[in-house]
Image (cartoon, rainbow, N blue to C red; front, side):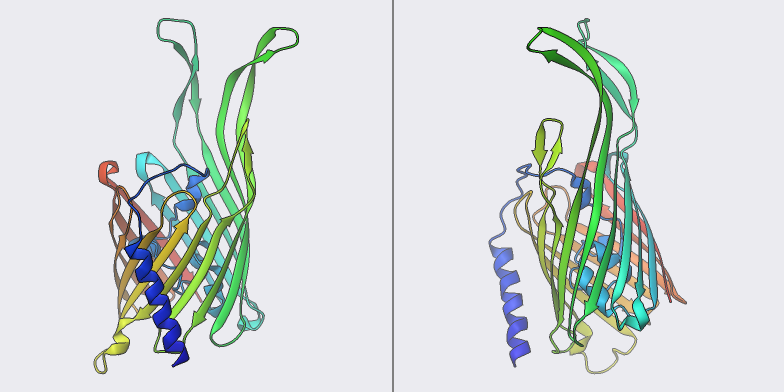
Length: 335
């Protein structure tokens, strides 16, 4: 009864979050927004609602605590995400169970962002008001290492430390010397980096397959960029998930219908709810759908996948309003 009361309390909290969710309003409090974009196709097909879902090494980007219950000895993923405006996100994750999981699991994550090429310009005293300074190729990257451990058969904790950085190319800047009254043009490289931390907990209630998890992502100090400082997109997430086939007495042996709900409180904008649904047939075929709440251009997401002999291929499609769509592909190998 205690576990059931806990589960009902969590569901009530999520419901209250939905009722009090505000209209989407970006208030631009953070930088390094590429940290809020993920490439894993399974997650994207389920609207990113993986905070309380065991998903192998990909959990390092959602809730590292679920790695404490990873069943395989090793799990690896490679993902490719075609984002809006021609931006491309690539990521790799790997996780290894130490001594069969008795001493926890260690994981690594690496991701990069290619913003494409941008024509650089500089203010100038001609009729156009500027001159072209050549192409620039802004990029971003993150790399981290994490650890998770199940403290009992029902509870696990995990965390990750990451180096994150962004390179926005270089530009010519007019620097004035107030003492001498002279000025000169200098070339500056626009680079910023920081350390970020992620933490998570994961709990199996013991009531059917109902579980919940909590995570904090992108915890960091302020980052100085030129003459201004900003914070990373800190996000607190609470999620629950359950196989709805638990309520079917007969005929559910080869089927699974996973429902996952995440409630997130980001620093950058109002709270939102993500809902994901994954249907699995014979542990081979997967169909996914999700809904991203309180967003401006996104809503429904779709995905599919197939798994054979420890190798799986996942695909997701996200309609993105005026930006057309985003698609992601993930290759996973577990043994």
